Length: 110
Image (cartoon, rainbow, N blue to C red; front, side, top):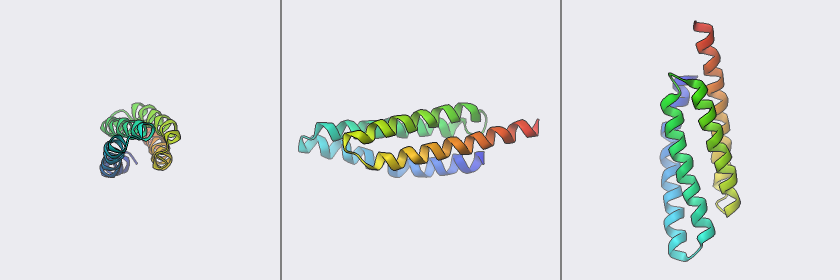
């Protein structure tokens, strides 16, 4: 599970980052500051995903906490009008669950 989480998080962070950067830039140009803040929140979520993926193999407990934080920030950011953050928040919670299963794998190996 830990390797799958690592690979999926690193693959899905690309569209999340591109989408969040596009929302941030285009909202700033259009003068929609509320949605621009949601895009910035999406960039924060993407950075947290990279950190969570980095710890997925060695320290899955840290990854659980980081992915749950990313999910929390995504759900907060979704209230700004950037509705796709709800989806990314759900994916963050799934990643946290996968890392929790990976934590159990590590415990059984010892």
